[in-house]
Image 1: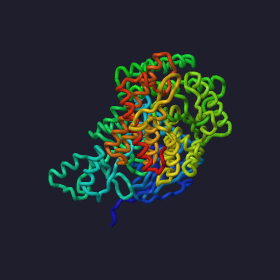
Image 2 (image 1 turned 90 degrees about the vertical axis):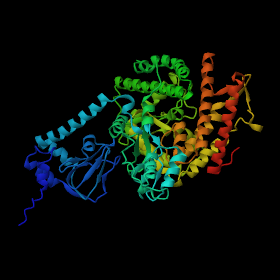
Image 3 (image 1 turned 60 degrees about the vertical axis):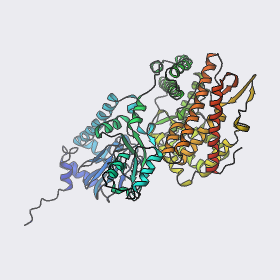
Image 4 (image 1 turned 30 degrees about the vertical axis):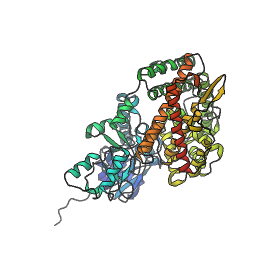
Length: 626
């Protein structure tokens, strides 16, 4: 006689679940009658983060189903658990990923049925409300306990590019890659590019020392570290917890396909949290009107000079300077939104992101930046909503000009309809740029493709960046890259025979345009290389480091470019500080008579290094330089 327990019925699974345990039998029967059975094979996805909401919720019945939240947290669903409830409550795209670990069976319940049951059944309504309350409590807890830098997503601070090998590669190959690229972790991936583990120099050293592996053995003979991974949307506070809990120094960053795209190290975490002093933070945050922002804008050079004096580092000072500029602009957006609300125009009718481009997007703003910005609007916006955002943009750009950020000469601004689109239209715009780049578009790309969120929903910006990286894969950006490089080829560098400095006359001085003929060469080159490699970070120094990690540049070349960039940046920054002290308007034209012999040599050597960068571009992209 078979004494095996009888398999639970679907009615029983729902009735015994934590969410639905209070439902009456009639309501459960109504759910089962209205739902449609859905089966998933092992490895299949119910949905992925970013997929459009399908106007239903899913009740898990059988099998092992794993959900990965935007934060990187993973949990396995239990029978009766509701999948996709957040999108039902918000009417928004899915923000998590649900994947079947084994064959799964689910009940798809239409959103219209859920709404009807909420109206007809008090217990059903209360069950949904409990789930909503739990979600709000969790969100509130995070907001109240984690603020500032720790609440930001890891993609803003991660080291882009995680070199990888496969299990069949040799131990010697892995050792060589770690040594040549001076990296602390090497990803091990399967044939599908999914992360299996991390190999460190210590793994290899112990295996070789204990005769557990020989240089010619395969990498899979060395036990890798179990990978602790997060997604680009994971907040830094969760990364900090993972580093501490697992007692590790690196956390891998993976995309939605589990492919490694970067690393968040303990050192990168410290750098993210160790912000330079910014004496204007509190004043900017408390600014009550535009006039207050105008006064604060005038204080920025003094504050930046203080940071430079205390740190003797242009990089640190430029970082502090950029964050003050962006904090001012962020506060201005808040004031404009408040004004529109008080005027009866209401709050923003849809999710949106104000993005900064160019030097702002790279975090490399100096003392007199102009404004390069745009607006990404959620796709679910109607005609009235478009009009609201047009009004907002028409206010934003003149207000930025009023507080000291000049209107962009190339009209790369949110009030220009060409830079104010829904997310879908932005994606289409970038797709056209990649597929059929014109000369003017390629020139604008050197500004537009360095973008980051100033204010609003950063997930819109992240999705646009992911789309751009996807469009550029497989060599599809070759023509765009050639045209971007060709635009720089027209710039005559100020070096003559035997690398002597060549100057031009300006208002009685012999000058060199340090921004256009020096820094720009390196900045633009790193942008092209980084875009080709799918590197999402925009800061030039971080791009150089990532390109070295990926093996695009060798250690010597990367170090040369880093030093040249920092030297040119320091020369330009100190030149502009000197101009402010003299009562002059900051510009990029370095006066030769104001440079010491030592600074002239720094300039000459750095320009020579940037010339090497041009030669590297010519070799890689087949563009003839002038």
